[in-house]
Image 1 (cartoon, rainbow, N blue to C red):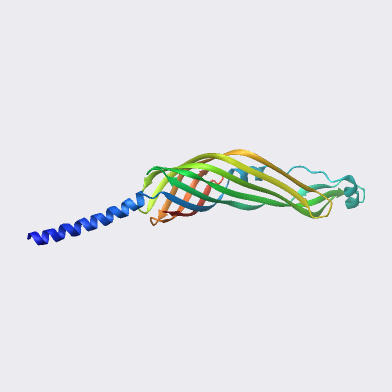
Image 2: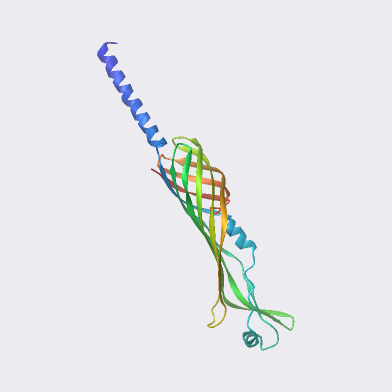
Length: 224
């Protein structure tokens, strides 16, 4: 092999290595990521599903109209209809392992409201309105990448923030029940394990943990 051929091979090798290194550097120098996910089993979703709606009495005059004065009417509730946990997240990577950011998440549920009363041992129901619970959470979070590959990654997350839980009960009849209450409570995020796979910029992900994104959630992430 002459000097000219060796030089050409060396230059070609340097170019290839440079391209590979540039690709690797491009990936490991990724600073930002934005994701959207949908999940099931958010903490506030579980609490909302387990808790009863606030007991609201029906005024005596209205109860008399409904039942003809034979008994007292009250509200009962139908089956739950859930809005799954939907979240949008952002992280800025301060190094190859740690990313700082967080997410905003929303979930909700509603149930039909019924006037309910009993006469002569028979239960009666009349659809009257809708009861709702809606939960909005803001959770600052740290993400820890403990395996970063070109097309695959494993990570965990931890954070603490707040959830705004709003309950409303609205009777469709004018002048009747129109109840609402809002509470702000602390909340946490603990993602035990997250997996992501795809290209260097677009990745699908699946997570298992505890928090407002759900016990299980899946989504799509853009890294740049």
